[in-house]
Image 1 (cartoon, rainbow over the protein chains, first blue to last red):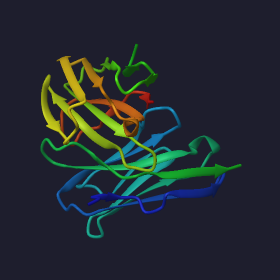
Image 2 (tube, chains in turn brown, cyan; image 1 turned 90 degrees about the vertical axis):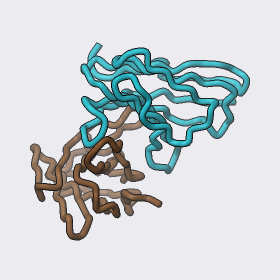
Image 3 (spheres, each protein chain N blue to C red; image 1 turned 30 degrees about the vertical axis):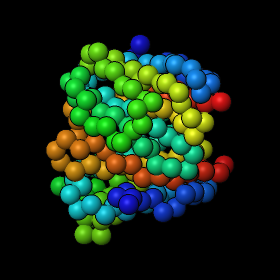
Image 4 (cartoon, each protein chain N blue to C red; image 1 turned 135 degrees about the vertical axis):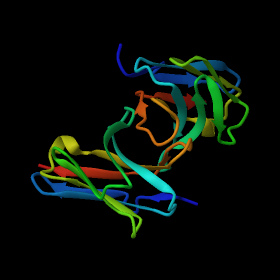
Length: 112
Length: 113
């Protein structure tokens, strides 16, 4: 029973274009969402987060959108750069002491 | 050292060996976590410690034994592992347990022969 789903295992985008990574969740109690980026042989690196009181959070080239009614969030990277090529994990947590729940990840390849 | 460090980075062990993984966080956090990442699977939470007390054990086999002597250090003791336990083991920490950003170490790549 996967509570956080990233249905696209991989995505290829041309350099300079927009990358859109999607994540769906099933638990309506989730109220904090994060995106992590992972390079091979390294641990995940925190990228950006959003709480359920917001529908958008922006940090430089990265923007996360949250649609609570659809239980959907997305990460937009504009413009995409070759260094963005990595696996991106979506994670979510309800309030309280419950740890984060991670999706399976989407491998982004940015082609020069 | 800054952030979350893990040693060793790579470990190869036989099924009858005993080894330990070490994690140290330099962020002043109070919660620490062990995760397992196998190929094509989501990150699997194994254990959570909050203020040195174990608060989560996700049905992990007893051949994995965690230890948290203080809020900065976390160990994972390994004994009589199976080849299917080969994976990347990641340590993370956060200020508090729950809806808080976790910061990860680089991981230990474990191979069980």
